[in-house]
Amino acid sequence: MVVATKNRKKLKEIKEILAGLGAKLSSLADHPAAPRIIENGKTFKANAIKKAVKIARFTKKLTLGEDSGLCVEALEGKPGVYSSRFSGKNKSDLQNNLKLLKMLEAVPLKKRKAYYACAVAIADARGLIGVVEGRCSGLIGFKQEGTAGFGYDPLFVIPKYKKTFAQLGIRVKHKMSHRYHALEKARKILEKCIERTKSG
Ligand code: IMP
Image (cartoon, rainbow, N blue to C red; front, side, top):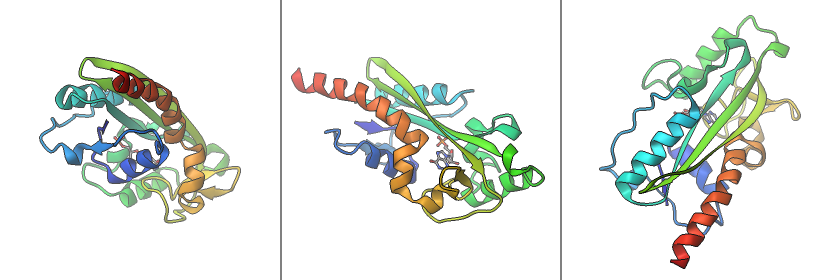
């Protein structure tokens, strides 16, 4: 199965969460001639579908497309589908986090609600098979804390633990993240596809 991403940190998380699925996962790094995907959808679902369908058509393999991001209530859902390029093209996670902190400078804790969203689409050479979503709620902290994870994790506070995902570490993140919730739903679809492939 192909995971239609070039993001190494995302790929690592997807592989860890889907462990035991019984399929060997490759990524776009293993398919250098695959077409470039322009992520211009208005929703996470639209982008995930585009990634899965285009790459499945090219590789002729079962393909998983994932699109995810952070939605902040006080910013009317921003950065949303623009999460990776919030502070501009080719900018770093650090620059995105600093921009977010600046925009929320005067916002008190109870108004710093946010959620991560993740859409996962599954396709094969014939087209789209299914699309699912997962979410995880939290608060945006006042400073970056912790070193685990990636992206906005040093700012994303889980209220129950009063710690960021970057402080809590990957094991806790994998039990409650948006990616975990979406992939657990996707797992059911994938198991059926893999079963079908094996039986005929
Ligand atoms: P995509 O590659 O267009 O789906 O961009 C996803 C972007 O959303 C990442 O570059 C991060 O900025 C953010 N993001 C998505 N999932 C996570 C996560 O689990 N932790 C931190 N940031 C995330």
